[in-house]
Image: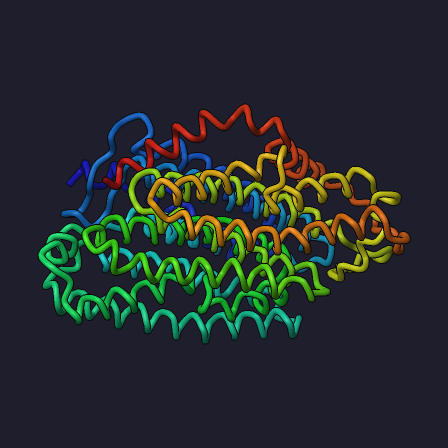
Length: 477
């Protein structure tokens, strides 16, 4: 039993720390928000240090309910980094209006605990508990600005649609349990290996539908543009990074673990969702005028490309998904930190794409960083964003899904249009009123590091990242 608690030490650190910080927030009030934020970042660092599965093989805890392996360790590192950077974003954005509340970092920590359980789940019950813990914190975060009608609307929409998706997932879980007689991934895989019954197939469909909502894959993407636009920008940056990685990692573990023997059954669903996401994400973003809505459709588009790698199945396919989501997290967080700098002369947030006009002449370094993120999201070489797309396409080709890779490449060309449009607006249009000059060293450091990572210098990390993702993926097989 002691070994079990050692394997869940990161979750214990975050849970205990979040409870103590909640008490501190209640006692000290909102004036302690910045201190609690830095303490939350410290807790995330400590949790990452104690991750099992990095320096050893890890293990299974609580009678097979929880896996602390290399796959979970890699995903949690990316999740913790995304959560920590999102906390840095919140300090600079909320603090200006005096509306930064002390419970914000506590909610992020509880979401991180849920995401940790998600990527380590080896049982449908653990999966559901982790998913709901992350979701409950996310609903509150989406409506965090109670005086803003858009934020309240985003929180309500996210809650209602999230409850629907949760019901769909729970129904699929009940079907899989009813027809297989177990909730453990290994037991379900053993039962499916003897042949997939109609009931089990329906259960697989419903489980994948529920998880597709969490990664905002088509046709369960409907919440994404509205929630991304209405939620506070730091919350949107968080939604686009850490929870996306956790949900994609969970999807990979479910398909490889519980549904491994039924590849042909679930692959068709993943392929449809991948193609629909890449096409809709590319086409629907073209007419957007709000930068956050455009990045929402960009998120849907990029999830589609990650699903191409997942459709390939096998260790190489899962490794390409981990590689893609790692680089995507850096690109999207960098882009959102630029959006955080979009404030008019009075310090009020500006979200229109038109306000980026002529940014290269008013804020040349900010425009350069944004251009790098846009070109990298488009997958244009020599920027590092080209590599993850190459990895997922290569995994699809090796799995004899050449046609899928070809269609995905075609849709990436369509998607490149709106990324290049942003660059054209910044460099060739007449300048709009200049943004307020921000003095946020932490935010500037994040933009700089993200830009360096997606630049050609990122190729120096290719081999190391490729080795780490492949090692993590092999832990599932």
